[in-house]
Length: 286
Ligand code: PZK
Image (cartoon, rainbow, N blue to C red; front, side, top):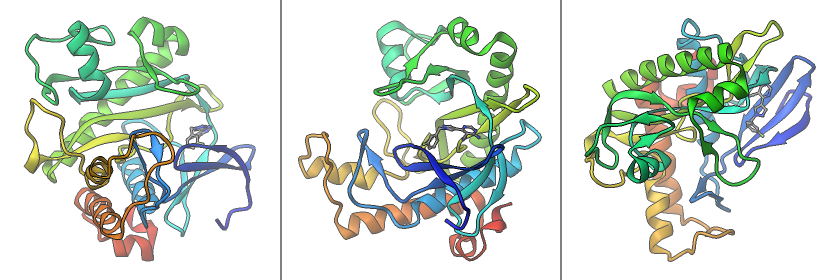
């Protein structure tokens, strides 16, 4: 990184540095996690794909809700961001029933208080996208919560604004992606407040790490869907007989190359910009 900064936090595959009192640097590594474990093998350029996609969406959704992006660094993997006071919830929007949404529906017929029609299939499309907030777990999995609990944690006005912004962002991204052969099945946003208390979108946005991307061409409800980006890794891990506890297995070169190609393909399909051009000059997404 060419920005002078002190490290303040680590995510599974990203790091945050403090630049000054008002500014952070958010940098995406090439690490990959699957089955909740970070693997010892990196996927070259994965961090650039995620950062480039986030920046692409941030620029195109500014009129939906303001966001924290201040500057995209020449490395293509670092965003300089406005420092926010983050809301204590994960803002998840689901257009399809997968993961914990499918699990909750199967067990109760509802997800976060949304009573859904009977007879929906695993990975089935919902009649309307739903907002399904979750509380941030310090470790382990986030917990889906009902609207009243999430609103009490954020304050009702900010909660309402985050919910409406999340649904509008998802509708924009999902329509854009579907036109380009990718189903944005669900996605997670994180919001914060700026110094005057107004809502700002933070974190990453509509990337493969914060969303489920499914290829339209392979979509078939009634079973788990192939992941656009991680399916080679998951398949290889299953065939290798890994018990899904840390440490994960090293990936062979053909799985690394195939997975890198899928990330680059997602970037190019969604942005309609060549990834090589992005690497040469990241500002092409802005
Ligand atoms: C912030 N995270 C989560 C993400 C990590 C941790 N603009 C902002 N202002 C203040 N805080 C944050 C942000 C953002 N984005 C986000 N934690 C703090 C997170 C990635 C890596 F280590």
